[in-house]
Image 1 (cartoon, helix red, strand yellow):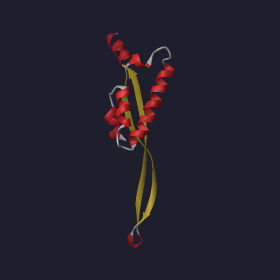
Image 2: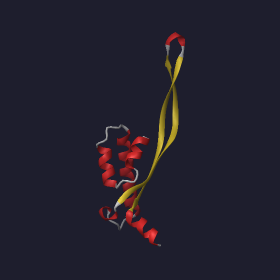
Image 3: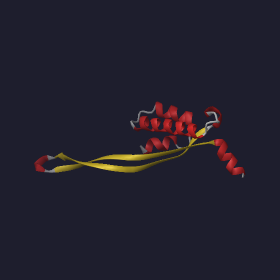
Image 4: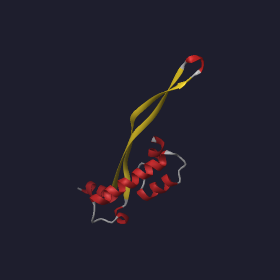
Length: 106
């Protein structure tokens, strides 16, 4: 998941969606869905602004570890090996380039 997050960090939103769509990594499908959700949330908060004119980009993306499911796999001679099934939490921040320029001017 962190490899996919590093690929799109700082990218413009449409380009990031294209990269995620054609990536062969399994995690890219989940990050693509999350990015679409972040774009929809941005549109809900900024109703008067058109998406095409706002120049959205991925300002931050963070991947933190989530819970770990611990399972046992049988091994030779009566032993057992522990298998850790990992999950994670991904946080995406999208922002428009216009708002960053305005903040820097003030």
